[in-house]
Image (cartoon, rainbow, N blue to C red; front, side):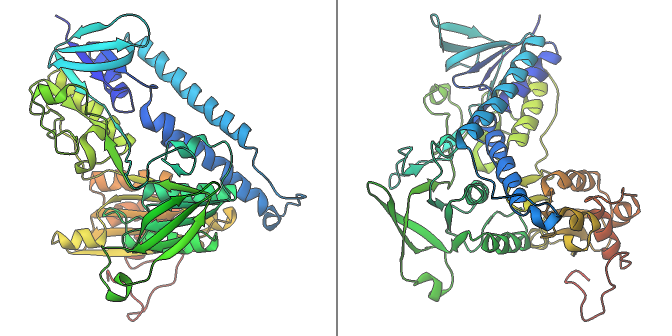
Length: 489
């Protein structure tokens, strides 16, 4: 008898799980109450990168004279056309996903799903009467939404969520971004590129204050923000925002997380801006779907608990993606990997997710790509590691591109030379991290990386060069003296 699988949520976790289950012979029903592709396709990864592509090109055109081009005037943004292009890109991706689902005979239902029990889901479709879907296994891919705060209720005009920020009718003259994490920093460069005056407020001591992102990447990013006149305030919080007719008056106070007395007792600041963007986290979509009555294990914020096989405490019920919350990793590519894992296990496999080697990609300017352990994390776990850095300014291709900011940093086991972390900030870091991810996953050593011939002139040469440097035989950088040697030597 053909196995029947119902999947609730068609984001990058849900639709990938549907395709994989169908490939393995299951009869699959995929339910989505909003647009297929989830946050990633509609309000996250794809639209933000579409807009950033435009701002990057505009920045390039405005410095064309440095590259030997004479262009009269400055490039400006046609916001209506940019929003149309964003919509076109999303529609093209949507069409592609729907064709894939159809080719694998996945039943796709657009409507609100309510879980009755582990085998039954009631669907209120967009058109027609309610349906009851019966299946053998259930995969929950219900996703997340921007976290709303009572002090800063979203109104789509003065107080924006990250979703609101992608549907603006005009470019704000000034914007205060609450939160200096991945979303906040990406939007900071986007709005600065569009011509807004930008202020970023972060409660912790650095931008991108995530355990998996190397602190030196944060330092470079802060320096590049200053160059672009993006103001950022760390160890600060937005206490309140007074909404006026044409602006918001923002009170910025000292952060309760600050350690130093001088910082902790800093006087409040006032900023008047046209718009406030709140990007301090995500909230669960799992409430109101019948999961509580199912007896599903969830925390008090609505995040679902699942094991390494992606199975919940209810046999035959799996959960993936943002539905798992920050206890896991809330990234689109992680949701897809979890979707593959859940689909295979729902059909009898014994696959487990490995969260140790997950790349992070931050689309700032310059980009950030990280995988594996930072020095701090490695040493906190008792690992004896060494590190080495190669700056992009020493690389021919970076000079050719005129993009020399940033570096590649590798962290390796001191005794074996095995790579445990790769951290890149610089041109195309989000692409370059793929090689670092493979190296860490396969247990490659410094010698493996150094002896792998890389094409010239290319940016990936930086990985080969930094490995040579770590081995004490740099080819395109000066040998360090004992007094100049890096911390890992």
